[in-house]
Amino acid sequence: MTNSILSLYRVFFTDDNHQLWAVMRDGRLVLMKRIPPFCTFSSDRTILTGVEIDGTQTHFHWVFANFQKQTFPPIMSESGYCYYPTLWNTPHALFAFLRADLLSPHGMGDLFVYRKARTRYHLIEKIPGAMYPPFFGKSGALYYISPTQTLVKRIAGEETPLFRPVSYFALNPTEQEYAVYADETIRWIDFKIGQLRQFIAFDVTALGFDETGQYLFFATHKHGSSCLYQYDKHSQEITLVLNHATKITNLSF
Image 1: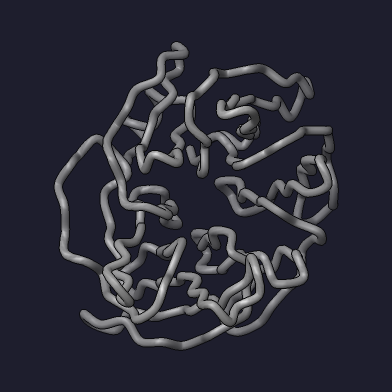
Image 2: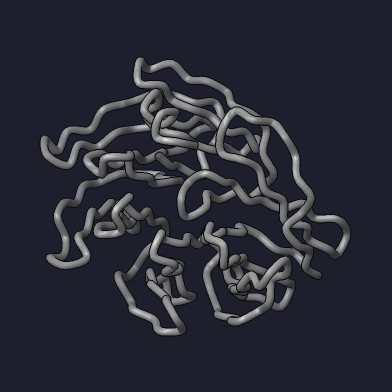
């Protein structure tokens, strides 16, 4: 997606039916296309990466995060059951995903990190992680939730614990602020000065900032339906954006 396209839209989201949706600035909801399961957005939000599990093999697929419906060969394949692949979209790309098996504690797995060299990806790290989508910032830092429910920033092999406990998180466009959800509370945090805002929210399933960083979107799911809300950083007002029939799983500008 380019800025010219993004300017037409308010927020993008994926749902449990493996579909990508766009919320337009005039309030309309537009179905963009079907996507692979367990999709996440790339560091620059232009690519979605997801999985296809075939027996005991997982194939990692990618699609453009726009209306184009062209398909591409898998990025790579891995043995076992893998989830939530995420991409640092640069010429020397980093690629990470979570893998779990029957021996993994509930909700936990191993986070594998690969680096691209020419046309192949090579394993560089294996880290314990919680089964929640990791995310690469534009800086190349990898953000993920550890088995202790700690949000961690990892870059060049060095880890910085950011907040605990965390069930869901989102990073703003400038990588200067982030939001976390746990214990029925959403917290908006500045990396340098600490917590800016907090408010109560129930049954949250996804968080995501808008393109300007002024608004935080969050989705809830209860009794088989979802609601998408917008929180204004300055006015501290919460506005219902729309209702959706399926669980919202990921949000992005």
